Length: 501
Ligand SMILES: Nc1ncnc2c1ncn2[C@@H]1O[C@H](COP(=O)(O)OP(=O)(O)OP(=O)(O)O)[C@@H](O)[C@H]1O
Ligand SMILES: [Mg+2]
Image (cartoon, rainbow, N blue to C red):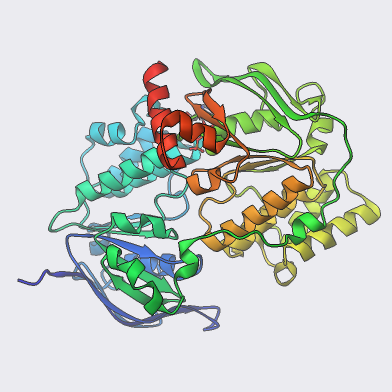
């Protein structure tokens, strides 16, 4: 007997800006119940629009759309009881605790309040009274997922659930989601990463609002040629090309050996140790990766080193300057890109650049030169007057990077700069980073992409607030007896967690 369709789409079209941007174009497909579907596409391919159409949050221009036997526009309330949706941006209340967020979702979905197994899965039991806003990025993502599963929905729509999730949890997340799929329950999981394809029952690749592949993930690679190169770019690959960002960077001359030094850096919140001990020395021009599971204390370490929060113990020096003793001077030597989009959403691109140039003390000709240079090297001209919130993701990330670089800092702190952006933007970004390092800029970076970890000169593996191994990517793989960085990460972190209390 053929399986029943859970979603039926016919000639669906959705455009924005009075028809100028077509996000979904004449899309037709039927999705059968009881499987996990990977919706794969680059930034701007139409993934979020399609998921939002399925939830009834957006109205189609025209075409047929039937979800769980209902019309999402006409039967929105009935549909709401049948679907669980995890939006791309954090859909939780930051000023409510973990448990209160869960209670709220349970009430909305008429679900029972038996949260134990969910909290266990997400490893959030210890943190259930913590405000959601104080969770690490990846912990928020896991909380978002368990809230979407509340009330056993028939259809679970997950918009890029693996963004910002560490490699161990990413596997667990997929395992958990697979565990909830049964003959009547369907999951749609969107992603920009082709390497997630093998975990799905069926893969749908979308490009410019059209479906260009649908089938078994294992046949995807062999069909790549037939797709006329359209998906090739999602597959990754890295070639060093010239970087206008690095070419126009004005490096300051200094004679310090160590650009960054952290000695016993620690941070406590009440009796919780977010960072126990972070100690390292980083040479000028080095690319240093701080890797570790969600909640390990990476962002907290960065914030202390940038003088944004006060350490509970230890010291940090940037270009030889103590960040606690001389915060302004230390900060003038560093650029910081926060994990979460930290620009002013209601200011235009130009106003954001001006704000940061002013904040770093640039005046007169230097101020005007810096704005002009950043606009040029990041190709931001056409967006100068747009609100930064409305920018396409790749441009938002460019603007954040531009704001961190505007004063030609000697040290860059980049906290998951590539989370959520597609392979093309990631490649462009790494091209700038490696080129800047050649100009003696020191880069500290966090990432959950193990292919990116390979571009670091040295890596510190960080877990539960302390370092468990440091070395070059090759040294760490050797130490772990692993061929890939992903396996080295999993082996060393799992072993480290057994040893640390
Ligand atoms: N203001 C705060 N109050 C209480 N706990 C906090 C606060 N800020 C951070 N924490 C906790 O400190 C721990 C480390 O968080 P941090 O954001 O540094 O992790 P991370 O390594 O960056 O994780 P991710 O990979 O998910 O971004 C987490 O348990 C987090 O909830
Ligand atoms: Mg973080």
